[in-house]
Length: 248
Ligand SMILES: C[S@@+](CC[C@H](N)C(=O)[O-])C[C@H]1O[C@@H](n2cnc3c(N)ncnc32)[C@H](O)[C@@H]1O
Image 1 (cartoon, rainbow, N blue to C red):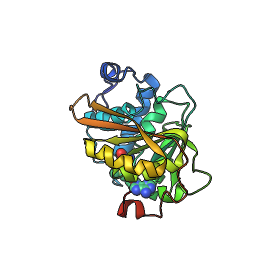
Image 2: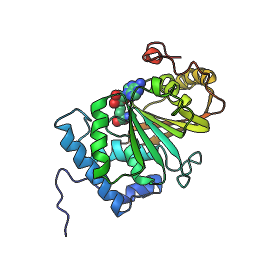
Image 3: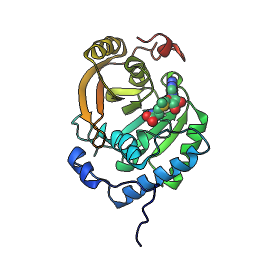
Image 4: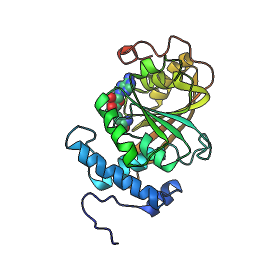
């Protein structure tokens, strides 16, 4: 059966996947990405999930960008069985594209907004994604809950706040040796210095700063990898709202 191309059809861009990340989705994964796109477009008519709706933009900003944070770096071995948390996942980014790519990772999709979590709860069975679970709550509270604290190998965090706020949300949730991945746009040397001061208090160290250019629009991206080296002191994360009001 031939595929009808319309404005709800995602490009496959297999060559670009290969050239930039040395990876490409197989047929079933392509279908899951296509379905994800359609479900988000449909739900976006009812609730505000994303302003990115153009197929090429969706591919670059939601799919490629999500995967670019975890593919091709020695710090993350895709073959390992990993416990992953996506903090402030929104409509499921970067967690859902990563869960589709790596079915042996267990991914918790955390967001404080109930209606976004409800959307993802409906989406997961449609995508037949069995390696994801949702969690509705504030990372400040989740990070102080025994069941979740120090439970994860990887914490993903995109478009949630300043780097030191992201670090305060992410580090308490990681096991020692675990990696927090901050998805950022432009990145200045001063941000590294400021983040390093916060990391001293949180038990982490900068492991890698990886600059990348997006393949379609040549936009600047930086992926910041933080390794947890010692336990995070129990006072972190601070109470709800405090990390944002008074960043470390
Ligand atoms: C700008 S959206 C980014 C969504 C997604 N990560 C992305 O890149 O498309 C920020 C999301 O973080 C969530 N959020 C903000 N602060 C949070 C917190 N302290 N704990 C959990 N979720 C939070 C919001 O509800 C929102 O869905």
